[in-house]
Picture 1 (cartoon, protein in one colour):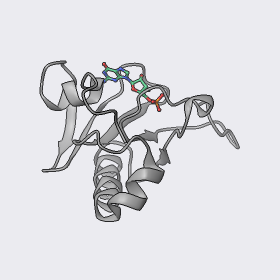
Picture 2 (picture 1 turned 90 degrees about the vertical axis):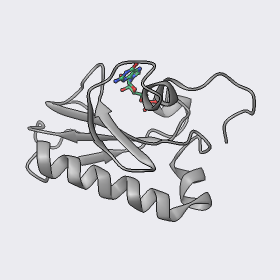
Picture 3 (picture 1 turned 180 degrees about the horizontal axis):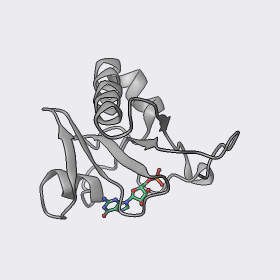
Length: 120
Ligand code: 5GP
């Protein structure tokens, strides 16, 4: 969980429209916007509006319905922007590449090199 009294995360500031972002989908509880440093032809961040959960493990344990909603928004974004086929990546922990501890998924779409895992 996020630390009480801590500064709002970058993603909370996007939710509050304090930081500009290209928002591509939104529900009452989930927001999707283009990644500022795309690593695939389509690279969209899908985040819960709350920063209560630091990662997908906490979210799955604490609010599985919200995780399902996040996945459903990811599917919709991929249908609209990536022909319906996509990778859904949840970096979990610093050594795995997580830099923002406000649960979010990366929707990665477009052409990948055959057999590649991370890069395109
Ligand atoms: P993580 O590394 O935590 O899994 O993912 C964080 C992602 O957020 C990175 O891909 C990074 O490019 C993206 N990001 C960081 N700051 C901003 C920002 O201010 N705006 C947007 N749109 N994306 C950001």
